[in-house]
Length: 261
Image 1: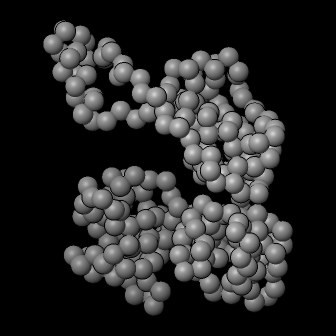
Image 2 (image 1 turned 90 degrees about the vertical axis):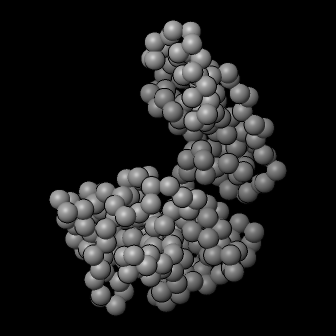
């Protein structure tokens, strides 16, 4: 069966404030009503953009169009007012492993959790969750748009999962990802066997040793700059922040699936 799924576009809140990051065919999900722009909560399809005027034309399910001004999105806030998706065709088959990209609390379908497709017919898809519950999803079920194949996961999604064996890939050139936290998650997800593919073992080892993977807060950065100024150091030669020990990883949840990171 071929599905039309929603794949989230990896953009920051600030990037969502610029029309150049929207393209016709994308889907905008408004989390809560935007009174100033006349948008109710729900999904809208992008039908046009005007980068010069910073305007995006949206269309709802009824065909009504709205002129959206992304620059009016607040640059700060606890929750993102909207999310941006690309529509992607996905072919699924009986036996496929999938993962949810959204949560349906009522049925226990949780974001990033895995399931297996046990049957497909013309009208519906039957899935079996990681806890063994079976659900029949009709063709118009919204959760059929919020899934992806689960044969490969990134390290962030793999946290909390455990499998017997798997294959992992790490690249020393990915400076922000080649760190101790990511490496620990990668090597502790498998019980029996891990095959790790790297571009350069020596460079990866050095990169992991250098980078603990802990984010530096704004207050820490301000303190470092203040100390550097008092010592007369150049602004581009600030001493590194004290290394913080990564937190202990949670290994309590076990899922009977093979994973590839």
